Image 1 (cartoon, rainbow, N blue to C red):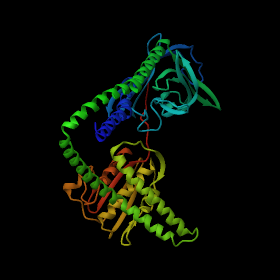
Image 2: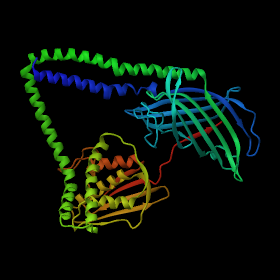
Image 3: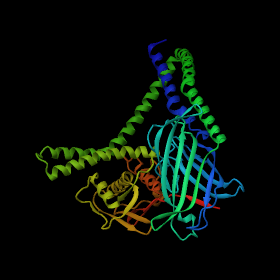
Image 4: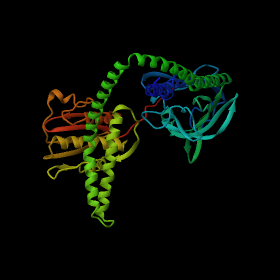
Length: 500
């Protein structure tokens, strides 16, 4: 067995092991069984007919909690959650809450709002924001470690208050709910093995809380035992994935190494030719990719060089020094944005929503764009604040402005306008460049489509992705060439409360 072929086979073995540990095994651990849930609690509820009326005698109540996967697209899944509170004596429903939420099945994070839709696997001893309760993400505090039927679990508790007036339309008063919960979580799987809750609905009159509903519930012994068994079974399964399967893979890879070595000796000349061909193809591919990336980062690097040259002549902390230093920093950030733009194209990343100024975003984007003296950019005279991802919106405006600059050949006027309505803002980026032919107008937002020899074909598709992630639209028209983006001013949570 030659040293070179032995190294190759060992490398194959290591690759297979890494593939199992970091790709296949994690995928197997994101099964529907881990995410979906059926739990049952029992408790008591007291209700009043009107604000100020006494609460009823305690009524025995059942609480059913279910989570089902209704849609799946890679790591993106749609979770349908139902909270059903029922009278144990009559089996009539007090009320039902249903949620449809888009989440990431691996991280267990919401994709359209902050926080987790369930406690993640491999829990740490820290606080977490989990579950949408009345339109608010529940802040849970880590309380410690307990033992439950031979299982070590993490204890978390949380409280939240929210307006629930819409559920009491006939009361004529604002109604709020104080909600608290205690969850016992198996830390390896993230399974919620035990869950208890307490909630009080009330009106505030003359500074005093007047309750209209008071309820609490805790898990049944059967429901708790089923979830504990589920957690224990998955822990055993994960142990097989993490320990036994790697041993089997190692033995299998060893057998493959021996078999491959025999084949290598028989087909040595053919493999040498194939490896040479593959190597050449890879070199060509790498060269093309490097050329495109070099083109994308050339302008920011030019700015960095020019600013550094200027800094050589500045001897103190002057305003000019600080300005150039800021431009250098922004240019470096622009390189980062370019790389992130490529990454955003190949993988989904959730929005980091903050209130931000569109005018400041445009100004920040312009700082990273080299402009000739002949180019004039008219910024809006008004400003609009939106709830959005500041970094992604700046990348959006950068790509649109740089596209306009390149289209005008550095010789024309570029105008940016903001038009605000009740719920949306319209952003127009207008240039005096050559009109876009009708036969390619529908293709310019497609991946890798470009009319520029050195273009990557990812700029406008990245713009489209960013706009759509913000629940907006983007379009283009001629006479003059204008890219129009329509964005919502705010993001609302789709929570449907139903009371029977």
